[in-house]
Length: 263
Ligand SMILES: [Zn+2]
Image (cartoon, rainbow, N blue to C red; front, side, top):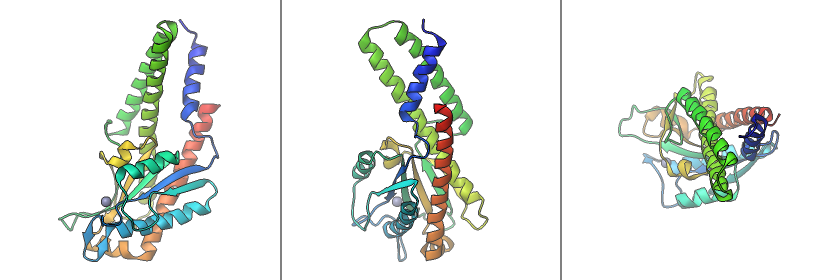
């Protein structure tokens, strides 16, 4: 049997393993979808690959000016790059966050709005997520007792690795959801903004990255009204600013919760 104090310090150790130190530079990978021979969605004269690269470059400029952020682009120009390569870039950079940019197209020209996707394989609402996190905490405590009170050294290590992996996965899901919430808040506070929705889908880049990740569909190029807006430089700048503001707000929230965890 281990004391509550030992359990608490074990949990604090695990939390500190992933906690982002407050005020440290926050490394963001911006991933403009498609590129090169892969034009993405094409509608009239609009090519998704070019459009998202333009917005990504504007976002890169904003983040580069802010000392709180470091930025890596998966592609800087119009070139083809595979999905595993994009994930590899993010892993190599040891990034804190992955932001993939895409533009939507649909047969129905009425389809509209911005969509924020995060990793699936989880309950669909925040309450369920909270519940899932509580459950995993209970599992962690049970394993904690089991591994520390008995069992051989090897199984202890294996169980601890599994606990750490569980916690990392939960943390990534929570953080990704938190990021999508920060994005929708920015959109909802602007009455001229396109309608924004949070969705879940198993996109490769947001499922395979080990850091929190979001895929943003910046609007429908098949919707005449949105297509017009998406081509305007001012609107592209506004889009980049909105994403930047959401990232600033997300980082602040993360810094605050890290500070609480470490105190
Ligand atoms: Zn796309």
